[in-house]
Amino acid sequence: MSATAFMPTVTTGTVERQANQAGRKPGRRTDEVIRASILSEGIYELVIRDPYVACTVQPAQFVNLYPADARMALPRPFGVAKVDDDDVTLIYQIVGAGTAEFSLLQAGDVIDVLGPLGKPFDTSKPANYVLVGGGLGVPPLLYAAQKLSERNDGTQVTSVFGYRDARFADDLVAPFADKTHSIVNAEGNVVDLLNDIEDELSSADHPPVILSCGPTPMMKAVAAWASKRDIPAQLSLEARMGCGYGACVACVVDTPSGRLKVCKDGPVFTIEELGWEA
Amino acid sequence: MNVLEPHEWRHKTIVAGTEWKNPVGTASGTFQLDACGDYYDVSQMGAICTKGVSPVPWEGNPSPRTAEGPSSMVNAVGLQNPGVDHYLVDELPRLKKLGAMVITNVAGHSDEDYAQVVEKLADSEADMLEINVSCPNVSHGGMSVGTDPVVLSRLIKHLRTLTDKPMIVKLSPNVTDIVQIAHAAVDAGADALSLINTLVGMRIDINTGKPIIANRTGGVSGPAIFPIALSFVWRVRQAIPDIPIIGIGGIDSGEKALEYLYAGANAVEVGAAALVDPTAPMRVARELDDLLDSRPELAAKLAKGQTW
Ligand SMILES: Cc1cc2nc3c(=O)[nH]c(=O)nc-3n(C[C@H](O)[C@H](O)[C@H](O)COP(=O)(O)OP(=O)(O)OC[C@H]3O[C@@H](n4cnc5c(N)ncnc54)[C@H](O)[C@@H]3O)c2cc1C
Ligand SMILES: Cc1cc2nc3c(=O)[nH]c(=O)nc-3n(C[C@H](O)[C@H](O)[C@H](O)COP(=O)(O)O)c2cc1C
Ligand code: FES
Image (cartoon, chains in turn red, green):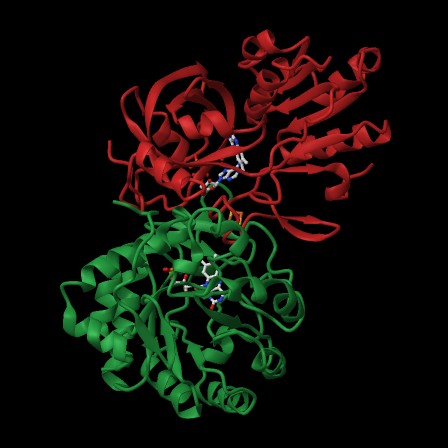
């Protein structure tokens, strides 16, 4: 399948080499699909080979995928869920034409990619990182768990995932988390779950820090819950994007210091930056 | 294709007395120094055209601000920018350091707004001013100025008295007769024309029956508008042989840039293509430079700043 919406494509190797030589980031390039599979009804896993993303991406950063169908001119942003050597895993749900096109990809196909993009979670301090994810906000938190689990500074990982129905990521986070919790819509939401485990959070070695990604109403509720308890929280937002790298000012979020770009100033913001205190 | 290796430019262009090291610039609203500079050496561009600069900070339109169409995007950013004072202190000095021509895109809601910005830029280091009288995404000013020859003429005549800098007037395609508007701008004192700005468009979400963009309508740009924009350039060139023209709309390759030069443009600007590949403006510039090798007459004309 050819992967050009607007642009002729060049291979990953060439673009990366040239960009590195010039001391810059590689632009849009064409990656090979290594594996494509279904995780659960409507939820897909896509593994692409991109050594540059693999060695540079930080948790909550995302990549743009470009549909091959020229009727879709804009990129689709997806959080990175996992990295194995040169391979990068993305997990996405089919919601429209772009994700429907991606769901047809098979091993050996190619896809155009840009990234990694955006500002990552700040995980510089050892803490009990509580990863609060809702729906397709979970994938970036899987990668956060993977990275945090590699540390030897007493950092702990607690996952708190809320799903619409199928618990598609519980098995994926388990190898990287000290404690895992999840809930499906029929049972309640992540704030209910946070209430249930509140005591457990404060009894860990380090104080909790919330890293969260999910639908906006969920994140507002998580922000309210955290700020009432003085638990620092970083929220990874979504916005409809034009470019994904900071050039068009399409993807803004209203904050006390004005309209900021989700793609470049974020996607990660603190509760205070967003003015989302309870 | 060696998109990022150092390049010796062979073909310059002269636009209203300003010398560009190659005929390709970035289009207003699709270039931000901090973002684009990560991906290519922006000093290599022929010109950098900034986002619209207004007298005071503008917060732009609410989200969502973009939708897409076939080979195109629709945007209603609404000229969000930190205002001219911030631009003069923070952005312009950094842009100037690069060495590309700096075109400052000027936005306003009223004649007074435009005048304030132009006055502040008159003694600045900006190489050219591009007066944006064609933005479809602001409720006052913008396109409402650029679609009425009488209103446009009054504005440009006034701005002409405020600055000696080369003044480009950026035209809207959303008019019945572009030639009439072009004449109005030139007769009032424009040194060059750039065209086109975006075409008014919209998309509706069929699940909700509501427009996707919060502003409801937006400006359409990208490859889909290329043939339309090209014809606008050609028509204005036929009518006004001696005004420098910057062609804009749907350019994503050196070939398309070359079509603009044949249609009568002295230079081009790359817009939406940069949003789907950050290195696109530089790639277009290099492809065009190579193509011009086999067009010595065209290249000579550009280098002398001859119009048509
Ligand atoms: C930073 C970031 C990370 C994301 N990570 C993931 C992820 O890991 N897994 C996942 O399943 N989804 C993720 N999303 C949402 C994903 O980008 C959209 O579901 C996807 O773009 C929809 O494309 P489509 O063509 O199928 O839908 P359509 O509705 O046909 O798309 C039309 C346009 O709307 C945009 N759009 C639609 N839904 C969204 C949305 N929710 N957020 C932003 N833009 C949207 C598309 O990019 C496109 O430009 C992320 C979004 C952002 C901003
Ligand atoms: C996101 C976006 C923002 C824009 N902002 C401006 C602006 O501030 N001032 C202006 O004169 N034109 C603006 N434009 C119009 C472009 O400069 C250009 O005229 C138009 O997009 C057509 O070119 P293209 O098809 O290459 O994008 C904007 C276009 C886009 C896509
Ligand atoms: S999507 Fe273009 S600035 Fe964020």
